Length: 211
Image (cartoon, rainbow, N blue to C red; front, side, top):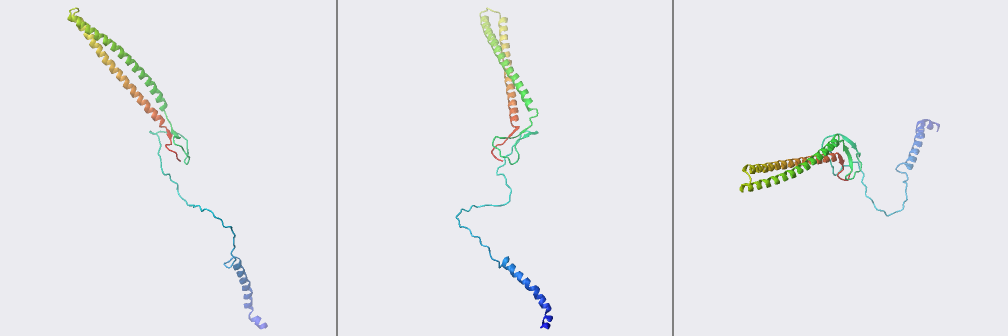
């Protein structure tokens, strides 16, 4: 017997190491391995609606893009919104620097007032010249009749005719001056309106609701 133990000492030592390892492997397999018991969770069956959900990573792009900007180059004075802010149609989102545009508008208004005064003066002159022509025409006609009856000399009748012709020329000149004054007034008004539009375009306004 002693000889058998002596002969198989190495085998016994190996078994002494392997048996605990085998037991440990069996224990682990039963507790956490494929042979382990499957935990069971009990839940109450309920009827609920399924809501579809979509998850992903992407880039949000605008469906419509509206470009806004001034009608002429300049410096930006103020910015009222930031990227991503919600804006309403008609909301001011920024404004350009008017530089000297306000002063030009003031000067244009002063020029308009002078032009309006010139038009009024030209109209008054036309009325005065028209009255003089009417009187000169009447005198020329009267002297022409008197000449037929030899009541006045031909020189006197000719002088009245010349006065009537001069009055007619003066009326034409006054009419041309009045027309020029009206055209100048129209030109200044158009320039004033253009400056007003240019001034209004300095305000950058959102054309539609959006971001």
